[in-house]
Length: 376
Ligand code: PLP
Image 1 (tube, rainbow, N blue to C red):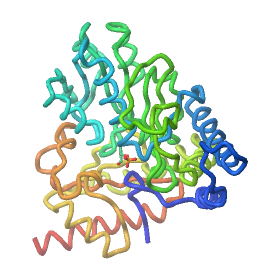
Image 2 (spheres, helix red, strand yellow):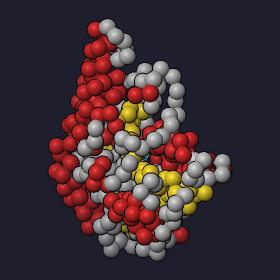
Image 3 (cartoon, rainbow, N blue to C red):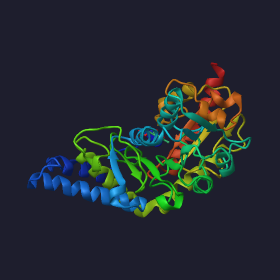
Image 4 (cartoon, rainbow, N blue to C red):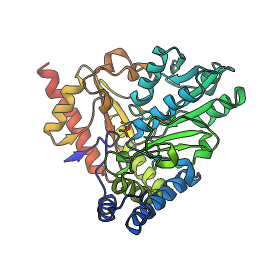
């Protein structure tokens, strides 16, 4: 099997599996006052310290959640609940993942004033394009770091700086799901007040995420109950998966740059293999994270190509995994020509992929182009 769908999810690493097992052995409730609970509390505290250090923030600014979708919903609805009576403008982009786009759509239905900024004719979003919409009424700007369909890196550092210059009270939220532990950054570098991250994109299991909320930023919780996570996210913490998330982060953090180089070389190889081939377009340029590569093959439907590749043991996705069955609106926002919109597959890498994987993918794609064109 050649797995090239790492933006959808990743294989669980040995370090994460061992950490899950340790978290299962330490079965106490971290809120219990006795020694068994204390053991679990120790794991939880160490995991929070690990995530906080990786983001360059204080421990008390990190909250564990079930996934990045929950993290982003918490910011968007939490900001609306806390401040919505006084300020009700929300600014976002048209290329966000549904975990941001959908809660914003919902708030629009409830009367919030939503501004969605589309990329320009070159497929780029500049700080000015966002900041020009910021006014005294602006509550929240939610802007992703790396787009999950093309890998485009949004200039969030400059975007948030420009936003704060116009209205320092605006809450700046960044979905860092496709950048955390792939690009080297700290929360301070981005200038974000809130950051969403997810475990299963970095070799931890599905079902664990985290949210950074800068001290002083007031959000109301989504979930009320026993007051866990500083009262911000009630419910007994998922210690095994939280422990795995921390173990994955600890394993990946020292190799961010090395893995970036490896993956960049793989992307370069893919681009070289396919460049100049008829009816093939690489939609992810130099301003993109090397981890995500969008490739269009003219006139062959994405799903048809995906299944052809699968028959050769190669796993990719058509657009993003979350848009299963639905036509992706995001690709057209990036000015990908109409003729390619239904003909795009997403290759997403991890550092375990090899040059042989890339060569096999490129050969299968070219073979697929020939074979499928005949039976079209
Ligand atoms: N944001 C981005 C950019 C993503 O790619 C994804 C998952 O594909 C998510 C958010 C959702 O993450 P989770 O599955 O942890 O809810």
